[in-house]
Length: 520
Image (cartoon, rainbow, N blue to C red):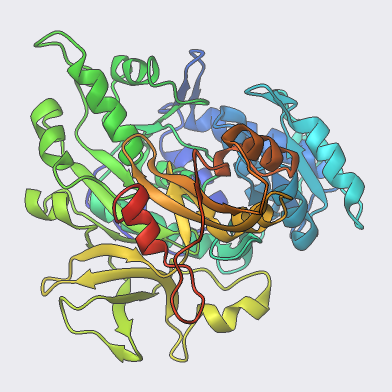
């Protein structure tokens, strides 16, 4: 894709490492990243650091197609590790830092990873101990590398790195997404599909080398690594935030000239609330031009509120791990479309809605199905592909939506029974399966309820066995003992005498949502 914006480079047909190399030649002294500790890194320094780490990893036996799982915060070292693994042609599996033993064990087992890279301690959690416990359960040999914070390095000239072999369509990325089932699903991506996702984002946002983008979400999220592709294309500066702090991060971003303030509804509301607490005339984000992101529903009034407070619009979109960016609002679209829709299909993306086996007319609600280069190659567990793709090759997103006569998409619901909390998917079934194992619980349903701070909160509705009961604290303790990730633990517990069900026995979750939090 060629952009009309000065300073951007051609991305079509190039792998991430080719883009890293070209960017370092074009703007070696341009600042690529700044972190909260005051560290800076230029594009030239980035490429050189990547090569040194590639040499260090090569000495540990990592080569082309080596499966590497890694868990790191949004640090310089994460960006460098990504580049180094790309230089080696490894298959990298970034894992969200919120995942714990259960998820990491499943992922590393299925992916048959050879190396697991973790920090030692981050946010009070001991990742090294978790890694050791996980590896002890695996059949395959896995080397643990601790990055706390230093990456392994060596002199690339001294050891002689192998010649780089570009393969645009090879599986180079494995991202796990928890959908409707308890087990995560590994989506296979190539540099081609990741680059295509960036093409859509760049078309929408028109990022340039003078922009400064807030990386306030986990870099191991598929969207975080799309931003790395964008940086190589545009020369944007990345403002790296390890842990988003509502009290301090917005101020830090503003002081450092953020122009693209991500990354979704939860963050946008935080910026808005922080601005409203300032004295009249004082600006929190004086350089901001857009609020970009997605991942959760947004209030219909929010675009107008952001325009009033900051003079900058919401640039939202819709995607998923399997197809990272499908639609986005364009910077030149009307305020009405920015406020009420999730944008248009990005260039090269084709969408349709399907209901009861027929393609919907404009304005008719149906399941959104998508085609395009940004769609994954399928799942690592290929038995899932038959349900994931229809007979015509369209990816079934599981999301309900409406496409209007102008092509703008509005997400209206989900076929998948997931809860989206702070932009991350939570499987209701996974939590329900664990709750059913509690000795006091006879029946259980987990629903998502609207939440101003997190987008949605998980609410457990349970029926207790005769002469038994359970408290909220009991539930939390039980789920923690079962090694459920903390972000998946329900924030609300309701005890009922019976769950509402239809004649076939399916729980009427719509009724539960209406009772406990309004229809969502």
